[in-house]
Length: 157
Image (cartoon, rainbow, N blue to C red; front, top):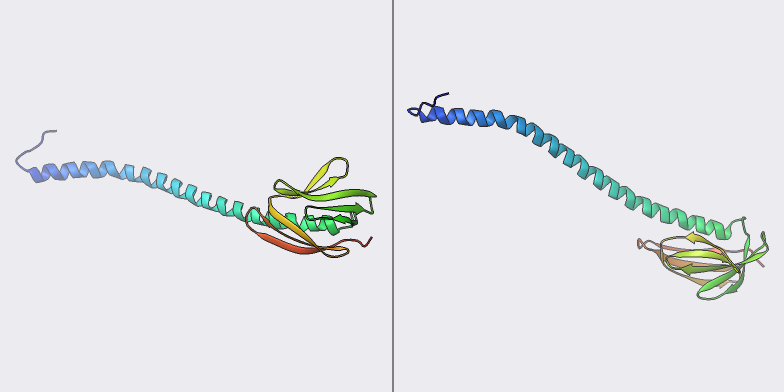
C-alpha cells in the first residue's frame, strides 16, 4: 500500500482508523481482566468480613458452652477451694476433683493428677471473684477485645 504524501489528512485518518480497529479488541481484554480483578476484590472483602464475624460468633458460642460445662448436669460441680489464680471443683457425678485455671491463652479444667480439657479458647485475661458460697463472678476479655462477664452458680456442697 502506497502512501499519498500529498494528502496528509488521509494518512492520519488511516493511521487513526488502524489504531482504533486494533484497540477495540484490546479493550475487550482489558474489560475482562478488570472484571476479574473487581470480582477478586469483592470476594476478598466478603471473606475478611465473614472471618471476622465468625471469630466473634465462635467466641460467644465458646463462652456459653464454657458456662454450660460449669453449671450443667454433666459434672454437677461444687466449689472445694477458691483462690485468685485457680478454683478447685468437685464433681458429684464423677466423684473427682478438678482445677479451673487460665493457661496461656485459654481456660482449662485439669484433673488433680493428669489431663486437661481446654474449655475456653482465645482468652486475653480472666478473673473470678467469689460472691457467695456457691457463686463465682467471672469477668474477662477475648483476644478480639470482646468482653464477657457472668455469675456462675455451682451446686451446693
